[in-house]
Image (cartoon, rainbow, N blue to C red; front, side, top):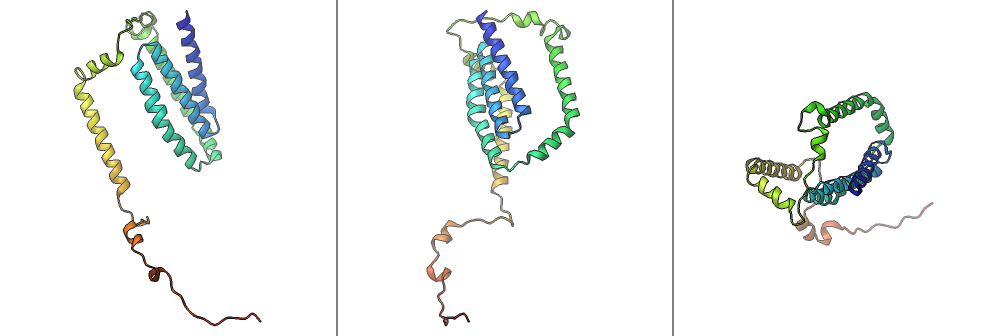
Length: 203
């Protein structure tokens, strides 16, 4: 009974936070609502005894990704009026996508997807002992059954990191660069010239 109350409380909080992300007029407030939704999701993962996924969601997304989002949002000069015009323009497309996603979730959770994902099967959750380690079990599956996809994903991420560094460090003709060694070697005579001139009197 207590677990059900906690589940419904965090589920409602997650829905409210998700709505806050969409309807908030301030981009910073939207990012903070997204942080709140991540915390609610991590609580739901804990109820499912997936503590590794819960702590990863908090540490990686809230601690790293969302901090980066906040910095980017606060540094950008966002035109709110233009964003509102785009929101009204693309509202039918967004509503259509929302209806499709809701239909898919109803199809998966309902009895349409067979006996695997029906409501009765989802309610039969297996409770483990106190010494059960979700991280250990996840590591066993990841490095045995899915070791090849895991290594391929790591190589793809490595290539993406190298490409991002290469694109950032490339030389652009329109960009001004500083050369610290030349700045240190600058002398007074290279930057300053003293001249003599007659005093001028205003008439």
